[in-house]
Length: 108
Image 1 (cartoon, rainbow, N blue to C red):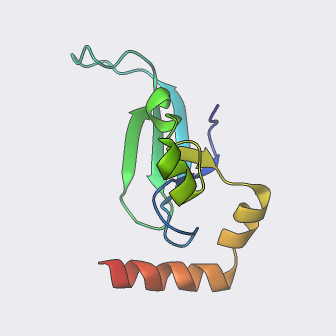
Image 2: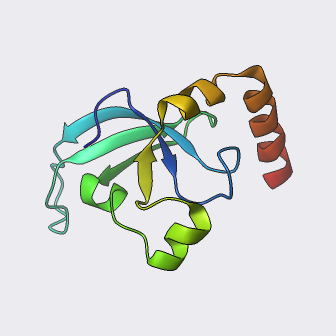
């Protein structure tokens, strides 16, 4: 489902400004530690608006379907979804970036 370079949004947040926006850095990463619970290759991704926020999860966790009440509240079906072309354009605007930075300042 995800490919290197994809831009995605996490479900939490009422609108795109409030959602975490991620860039997929790598797919198919093999975990070589001793955690037997990790069965699938990992996806490595970073928050594009927060320096140093890099994560790794199994794809099945990222594409997990939300409960119906969360789907309605957050307007997403899956935990993490690719940005639409319109959303990709939106996050590149100066207006969006200013709103995002202001939101992050208020949140912290």
